[in-house]
Amino acid sequence: MTSHAAPGRFRSWYTAVRRLGEARIYIAILILVCLTLAGGLWFQPNRFARTPAYANLLGILPQHTWGLLYGLVAALLATTLIWRGMMTLNLTAFTATITLLLSWWAVFIFRVSTDDSTTVVNVASWGAFLLMAARALWLTVRQAQPAPTPMGA
Image (cartoon, rainbow, N blue to C red; front, side, top):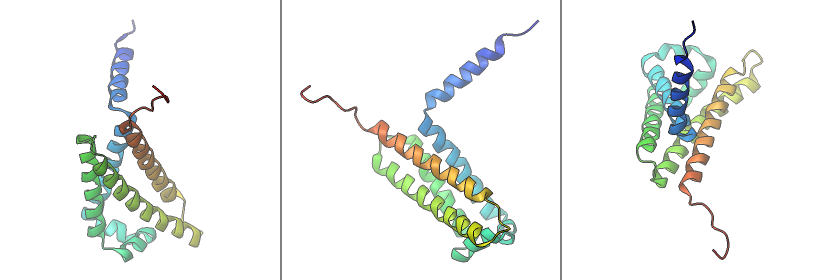
């Protein structure tokens, strides 16, 4: 005897996620990524110092500063979930997010291009995070703009 409750549960979960909206899902994922990195930079300092690609980043700013920046970006992104209609806040949060992710992505691209033993995992990861941030920004701006009206209407 099979239970038919599972498909209904999946549909209700799927419907709940769809109601959130694609932009808000991307923002939530980016918040989790930024909080994870902030926590790692604050509470696992030796892990980042031992990795050559991260050592390049730690030469630019100390790890606690990077952790603070990621924490601030996560807080900014969280405020965009609360106050969705404030376009200035949204643009500020996404500018900070994209700038921070882009700076790390550039360091990883430099590392991969100068060292043959380095894998492209970090380049791909940060590229995916950047794509999510750009897509969330685009969706947020698109949702905030009124629908175009036909000429003469």
